[in-house]
Image (tube, rainbow, N blue to C red; front, side):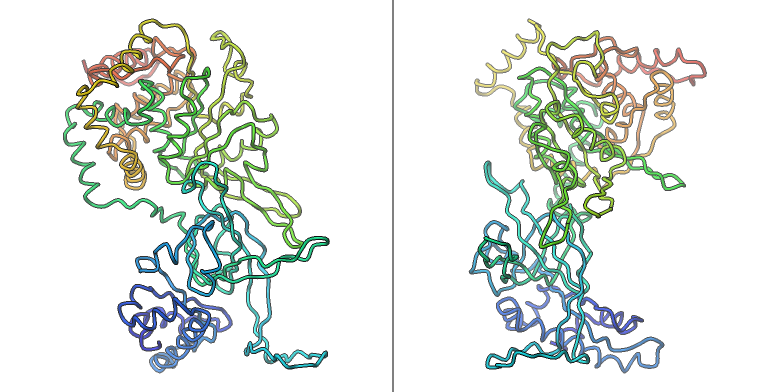
Length: 604
């Protein structure tokens, strides 16, 4: 064991030896795949009997330090550290199989005693405690004494923390209840995760007695003693994007180099394809999921890059369909309804666990880094809706419950859907039509109204589309595009453009946005998202105008475009680039009326 550590983990061992504090516990990360290649019998023993061989591995780490210590003993602070723990990383190894990597709900007695890996979201994080353990953990079975005395020199203190992880709802079927399991963290593993973090835990399944409660039977509860914990919040490795897929993205945009908006619309058509038309809604959903770029000024003040979207519409206009599809497109999502949600369920709640209070994450915290879809938004009680103001704007939740004062991160997109209060009245404000307060509505960057009004032309188009769907051999080109932009491909595309592109405003786009802000006193923050959607790192005039059109579509009246207020009847045009040229000319003419508006050449 020591030879393997010296050969493969020499740099880590040197860093530990040169560390200044000998009382700390240090991790030594070992790739199980490397161990399998180097010493298969040893790898098998560690995976099948971890309780026996992992402590031996820790002793080997101490021995390996002594072997290489000779090269560093003359250096200041160099010493052999007593508390070094080997942490097994199973990524890319045969242990990533269903037998040793089950879902939390499928953990059984057969998994006890082997090196087990579980994946889930931290829903509860307990306080860090200190426990004492003797150097020699032997048990005297025949001891009949009733008096024991602590031997002070034989005492080792460990940091200790209990967390609870829950399986992701995205991998569960309809009606399935997500299961959870406690995880024990010790030494260097404590306090490295918080509620809402996605984690992969490798450890040993064991059991502990449940808390002693009056009139309740004391049972054995399953618990995992962690050996290695990996946070996945920044990794976002749930979706692997091969180089071949990235080449397909680039090839797609090269084919639409002369008609970029036609390429954009080809992608948008595959968003919630079961719903016909609704171009504006599909564009808004795409821009919301992709998001803009977060800005931090010199004082440290953050301007969020995530957008929030609210759909206000009559029943049967497809609002819930868009919510469900958006949840599928996001790498991390939580779906809930306003009727079944409370302020604690959305944010965080304090629960008593074994005599102490701990925080349990709600929907917005669990959706950190993803999207939280809230259907029937109007069904939430007013004080429950008020609790999400901070989460939507500052992207944090400040908690002061049961003596626990903290701040949790909620970098979450909120996608809501609500019905109007009775018959929608275009002459009244949105707040009156929805019973939602003005401060809450101001948190949503885009609010789209879907009204099921009588429109014979639109009804004829929709009915013709439904009938054409049943015919064979029609729309081959659209079918080819649907094959290209499948659900998996769309998820990969959104993940790639969010991670790869950080668009910056061009001077031309700045002029348009600045003039529009002077006209409406409202900024179009979706321009960077549109640039990402168009697969580029630069916000052009096209992106700025597309963002303005999307913002204007959420207004009941507009000084920019002529027909707004009902996104239900917005359809895809046959020649979007030619249509854009007309809209661009109109918008620039309207903006040119503003004083000090810079001269901009209008393309015809």
